[in-house]
Image 1 (cartoon, protein in one colour):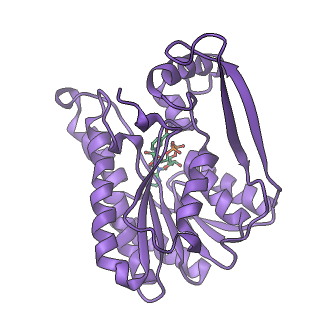
Image 2 (image 1 turned 180 degrees about the vertical axis):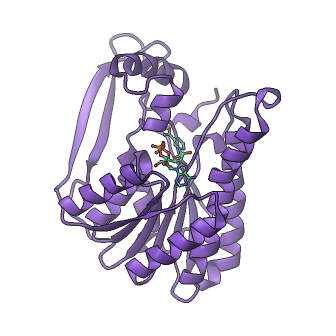
Length: 296
Ligand SMILES: NC(=O)c1ccc[n+]([C@@H]2O[C@H](COP(=O)([O-])OP(=O)(O)OC[C@H]3O[C@@H](n4cnc5c(N)ncnc54)[C@H](O)[C@@H]3O)[C@@H](O)[C@H]2O)c1
């Protein structure tokens, strides 16, 4: 697949950032690794939520490094686009429909995926949903939906994946959120559903550590994905997005003062999934450009 590039850029500081005249220097991964790597040659990988955003970047990155990838998602069109782009670049991937809220759907998709892959080594359980309201204003249906995707969906995925890993070990990475570090107004359901993943990862680390199964959480800060653009009311509107992005970054993204790219989260998922990370389990890694280092 394609060789890598990275982009280095400078921009004038914004309010609340370094004093005027200072520049913010960022080096951002654009989806291509800077050197060829094959850490996942012959590895069998499942990525959920691979139709879009972070999951798509993760599936593409695993394939680029030699993995066979099963792309699971409820969004057939998006996931098939991911599969097509992997195959067009010479990689190996196939789509399997799943609704992670539904036990039978997860069981079937997992069996089909492992049938295609022949075995299972690595999993990125990434499908997620958000929704914003204070507790007294949140509908019970919205609460249940967010938990069904973000928490029950991860439990169900692990329930049907782990039997395939028990005798050979492997890596499971969950997509958490910066919200596991500190909450934001109007995010009760999302915060609680993502914090639950810490407990799930820690308990699984203890239950399966001696079987060689490592379980970690990658917790992104704000990443430029369709989910975020929609949440900011700027779906399919570049001008509006540029406006709200700058305000969001100024007020919420201390440190590197920018949104992340999905590929930058994928890089952390691959790092934790690689054999090099053989003694890392139960960890939560924030991929947030330093935002969680701020007091406010
Ligand atoms: N983008 C961010 O800033 C950010 C920050 C922190 C955490 N996250 C988390 O990252 C993960 C990916 O989000 P994203 O930003 O790439 O958003 P996205 O909307 O681009 O991708 C989410 C994917 O999950 C899939 N999905 C949703 N419900 C599903 C279901 N019931 N069954 C199967 N698949 C389903 C969607 O079809 C989509 O492909 C989510 O878990 C999200 O909570 C994102």
